[in-house]
Length: 529
Image 1 (cartoon, rainbow, N blue to C red):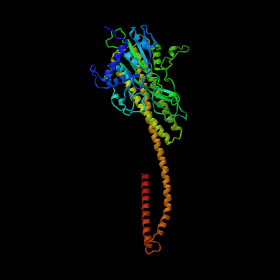
Image 2: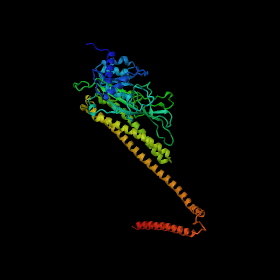
Image 3: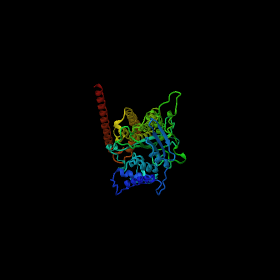
Image 4: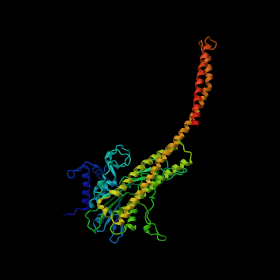
């Protein structure tokens, strides 16, 4: 049997994706969410071949090899296009392929060499065909595929979730999360667009970010923050039929996003991006014993996970169980979640501080309410994502990862990951509660302010009423004097007019006096009771 060449494997894989996306007599795919996702993957594989001239940037790939002596060794592949097939095909030790900035070439090569389910890649790129873009947002970076919206659901098909019972049958998992990055030196006014588009010359998979302008304290501005929507996916060539003593997997792939770069030529609007600020989870160094393993630069997610796998004690014992590798990714993700929640907590603290110490105008109140509405929308989505991740770890892990047969060490790792997510879940819940309480507080204060304003207005109207009452006798006299009938002063019926008007005034005065007396007696009786 003739072994197909690398080029042939890549071409066959791309052809399979195209047939699954557009239909084929051989495949006869059913019309479902999977078909739509294959359309997105097929469009992604054609980047660079489209009439509008979209190009793509190169991926960065690192291979982590797990040796029999319990050590891990990492090696970056600068010339991965020529070296990756050899790395995949040679060696019996488990190898983890960590890909940053997934490119069409990397999809074809990995998919063809390892026969990976295309859903692994389509779930990661997290896009949908542009035909589902009902709103037709102008100036889209790409006209063929767009990121799946998190908030503005238009067409239902791309947003339908997979059944929980089917996730365990898969060989991969995908996790969505948010990474916060501060931008130094950007504009600080509210007229910047909330949606931040990426620089697609530096990243192939389009990710968007939400602009977060922090609430000032004592009129001191903080740096703008890009809340970037990230995805990560991890796959292993595991099988339920592994013999006892054999490694559970021999090849694995992790897909990671590169650092988010704003489409801002000259950095005039948003400024310069800073690195991650999350608290490193590597072991703290002992006094006078700081080593390479104790330093995590956090320049990129790829560097952080490689550092964790090579230097962390937990990740250095024999063949790697998928959970022990997933732990590093989970810690990065939960750390980023905690950073986002801390930014939200700072905003809530600053709003409360402003309400306590400053004489806030109604315009500022309205600005706070708008910001709180945005926070409430975002926190609601974050809660949903974290809940889904916790459910994934508890009930939906792939069956082929042999979760049920984990050792005590692996069980401790698994429980630790779930505990970290519970910590994030609690932090999101606290901030969600504070957002609701702060909204109620601001609306109550605004109601009091509006009541005070109404009182002042009523007092003004009362004063004008008094003036009108004082002027009434003069108006009455002028009216009477100006009468030109037989009831006018000096005419025959003048006495009749005076008697009738005096009687009417007396009756009205008596009724008013009796009403006041009744109210006084009623109040006096209530006081005695």
